[in-house]
Image 1 (tube, rainbow, N blue to C red):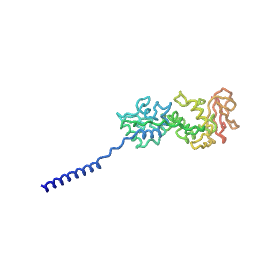
Image 2: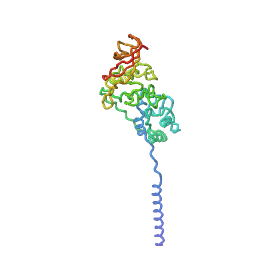
Image 3: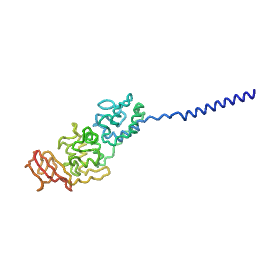
Image 4: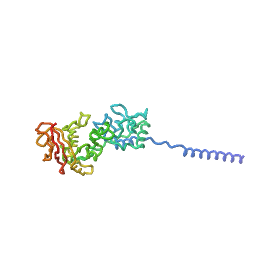
Length: 310
């Protein structure tokens, strides 16, 4: 009897040990479920690459990507996130280039495959908000200095939809790309920014309506007065970059002014110098429509090379 009891106990111990070993092995063999991407991760990515355009009053198609509510509200064309049919989500189709124009508009570079996969995983999980309140962004301190960052925010919302390699046009109009400071300063067919001289800078002249067609091309609504003032101040103060450095004057760069004669050697308030080398084709008077072609001098002024009525 004693031997039989010991044998039974050994059998139970062996069985228990085997069960424990199998459970441990199963635990290590079972795949660990990956955690679904959380909204804060998606929000950070959108803030980095999308919110500069898709926020505020002039967000393209009314699509705001600066909050969970904005993303889920979608655009004028409907939802952009579809947990019921993830692959058909317009936001993914735009990011992958399956729908045009591909986003972000200032690409390439576009989002990396793993970044798109992050958004796709979030949508697959049902596009949850995670119940966490989004902190309101703190307004930046206003030091009175306008840098390119202030202007860039305006250009991204209202201008790069056309003036970028990935815009709605086959090519940027007049070769003008507005996606980076270097491209803005380089201009297109002609220079559009003369640091210190907004009156002769085509960028400011177009948004204020001195030059035609007035920009943005899809206006009205045009830029707001504060936005126009921001661009004008930025140019007047030297087209300062984000590190506080003024842009170099594009000496010798060609430009063209078309508008109304407002005074001797002046179109819409933009003065220029007429020299003996200037080709004057017509006698002009105040109120006439005229065209002046010229070059930028070392002081940021304009020397006319050709002057004629329009």
